[in-house]
Image (cartoon, rainbow, N blue to C red):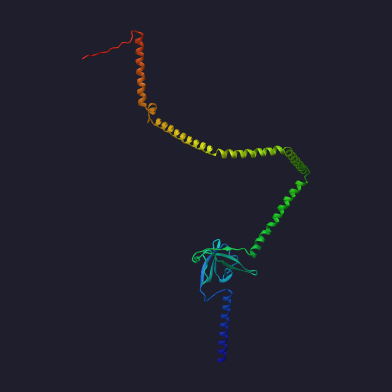
Length: 304
């Protein structure tokens, strides 16, 4: 009985240590540390591309942690990284999901930056997904679906070109166009050869004109500058004159000057009209008296 209990105890201890060793092996394979303190922070990626919990996290190529958690957040993926606490990630560090090796597997690569400040581990940071061989092959697979369509369109284009080339009328027109182009080129060459002296003379005269213009501008730069200044002064005076005329017109319209009162003051207009009527009546009376007996003046003069 005692031997049976001893055997069971030995078996239990053996199983316990076997399980302990198995757990340690799994923890080592998954890069899980029990004793070392870890720093956790979140990175947003557009695509996890097969990344799994426990995959390696490397800092400048050195394994310093593992993926602690992965969760889907809308159209992106939030990956929680756990790295050794003695590693200080810089503020301008870059985060990438890449291929672990040619056999497959994924990892998160952290490329340290040049900033002197440490990363704020409480904020959500953004990483970049790097296309690996499997992703490239998948893209090639989608591309192969478009290849038959592309070949079909190329064949249609070639058929159209062949139909045009095989058309005798089109070929004749093309030959005619090439012959005409050759004739024009020959005529142009002959024209240039026959007038090369004139063309050279024209270029020389143009060069002389440019040189003379430059010399004229250099010699008369002060005079031209003075003329421009006089024109500028004249424009200023003209602007002043226009402002004065505008002010006079405004004063006239508002009736602030004599001309404005004469034109727009209704009371003054009535007085002038009355005066004119009176003068007209007086003139009429004088004319009648001059025609008849002369001017009759009735006056009472009192002396003292």
